[in-house]
Length: 304
Image (cartoon, rainbow, N blue to C red):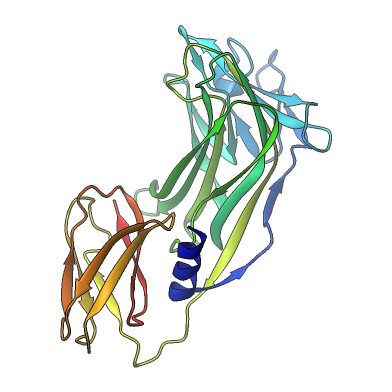
């Protein structure tokens, strides 16, 4: 898999790896006294599900059982309406939906670079060995006309039960077309999945960091084949076309990988071809990277 990643990177874009740009060690906590007599604490820069679980119990706590430093964030499931609702820790501000006991991101982390990986440490205790904690990552783009967010990327990772602090390191993406004026990152941790509703779970999170990368396009050359994808984005399950700026000199092969680096499809193309059709049946919504052995400039297909 690492080989595939390297091929994708060097074929498509020149990447300059940066140090972690966002680090949270959960050392600074703020008291919320807006609704006395409730008096919970929340980590600076984060929102918690306490405002929608406080009538039963707090769902996020400051814990001195940390991996490093003094404190960690402890997320606890709360027994509400005959099932366990997750404790939620969300980066930035949130809107709270009391009717559904859910929280939605309001202001995420402003993106100027491509979010690459999320890392950190966790431990989890639960009476259900099959229960899982959740890490949910989204890249959102605000439509200035409708003032609504569209989801450019949505990825969910699971955290299994462990008694001692264990590291996690999850890929977000190697390439997303970032709009620095409108794109934000939404990051959330959940103490349990919706399906884990019969047993309580406790999830400790500490030392969370986000890595970012910059993408510098390679210089344009007149002899490099250009590929246009139309339509792009396309609805999953529908066909799209690759249109070549110049007829191919010789036979070639198109390779398509998903955002994790997995090879999805190889498509042979004949000499003098000017376009080819790409079916997307059984594909899921997301980003797909298209490259050619003959040296055409790689491009990205977006499926909704």
